[in-house]
Length: 367
Image 1 (cartoon, rainbow, N blue to C red):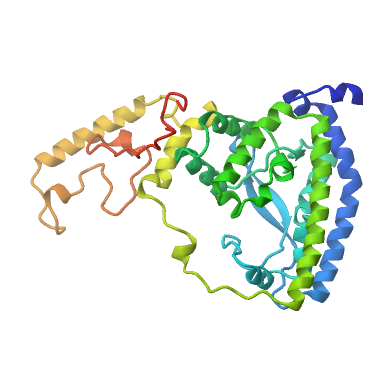
Image 2 (image 1 turned 180 degrees about the horizontal axis):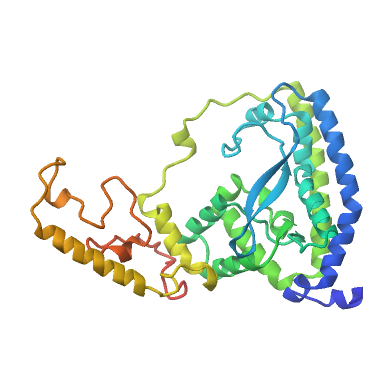
């Protein structure tokens, strides 16, 4: 296939073409040597400008969920000290957990360069591509749970969310996303914790699979270079301003204020059970695939055991007797219920979570 023919490909025809793989590999061959030199220069700068608490800028490995639910490792540079699950809430905290070199690396997206280097080496060995240049960003398990809960709460349209579940289960992840270059992803405060960010993520990812092309990928790559240049100018302006007037740390907030508690009806088991219906057919649970015969048999056995237990005299020891006693097949008080609790015990019936007024995840579409 020549370039003229490749320009005519759109959507999955372009995404699955061999020309795309060769085109991406040629770009990596030109950029990887520059990335290696850039990482070495940043580490040297970090050694002379960082303080005792500076990040190491070493390559760290992060788990991400890829096609077909498999887990793979993503390489990144360590650009921040401390626990990664504690988000930065102020410029003073950012400066305390970073160095000049690591902030510069974040401004030019150098923390992503090890991914491209690893992908190029993988292709040189003749292995199947694990990353693409443009597409959807692979998420970790926590981010997937956050997206599931957003759909259950009615923040995400069912049709788009189901399409997003299919594409992330079938397509490779990507270094760049159209959402970050053209969707204003950086303008959402709080990142993926913002409902607008989550909606923009699935909207751009789903539309990209339908309109992907060679011209579109070139546009995203040019746009990403322009955004990095703007971030670099912004970085130097901020560094000069904060060198004259360092930012003042804000008063520490308690953990309860940082992470507000969940509503009881949206517990993780409830969200996982409802979101199960949006997964590809092969990855759904037996309940979501309507294969409930084994669960019904087990539920009947538990009902029979409970009936026999109620006919026996109540145990005197143990404090509370009668209705507060746990029968056979029932979890002890204070312990979590086993999976598929609705099928394992017929009494009392499990309460269903209330559905949002404007969108119900349990409507005919979601089935």
